[in-house]
Length: 267
Image 1 (cartoon, rainbow, N blue to C red):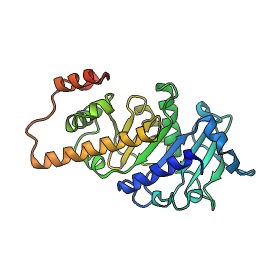
Image 2 (image 1 turned 90 degrees about the vertical axis):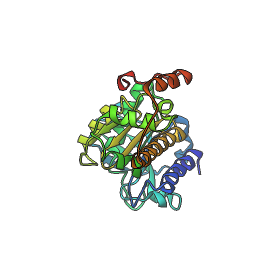
Image 3 (image 1 turned 60 degrees about the vertical axis):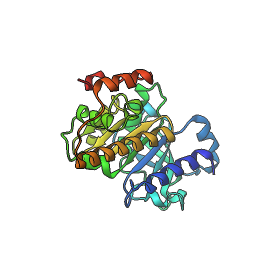
Image 4 (image 1 turned 45 degrees about the horizontal axis):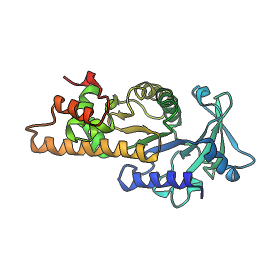
């Protein structure tokens, strides 16, 4: 199997092992490099299934993506990749896509595909095309944390920065949060894509998180760091917080690691 598919499959299963993908929860898309798509061309069907899109994807016209399937389980991805994931190519006009490989037995891409594609478009535009991965997972601690605060990015980001020293280095922009909305539709897709222009990760209140990155390691590491910080905060809060990392210490930390922390979130 091609390395890009092996790496994709590993991330799916790593997320399952973390407990972030109950049942068919969560999804993953990867925008393939030209050479990766070419290396997988021998897998492509000569009679692809065509599907329409409910969004304008003209900004990523003719791009190739690896995607998880709707109703498919992350735990099954390593066992039968061709049934649980697939490769799609966006039409030249951005109005639909072809299923070139995988998603067998009539499977379709994740129901969150509109959110993924709009998030790819947003992150591509603010990272000069560097971002290639969009990942949606259901980690328990960051989801639980969303029940304890108002859906405010400053409040959430400060909690996470102050809960684990490395957080301000990993996501100095902060983390966005979107109040509860019905998943799977264009409304939540559009709102998420606006926030993810500002932040590399966006929490869906009472639901989960979207993370982005240039590759699988960066994206998984981002979500893992946020989830661990949320766990630390909830444990510390239950025990009783008596002190934390100060804003001045966060500024010193950012300077030491040459990152630009979001000053709007500091006092």
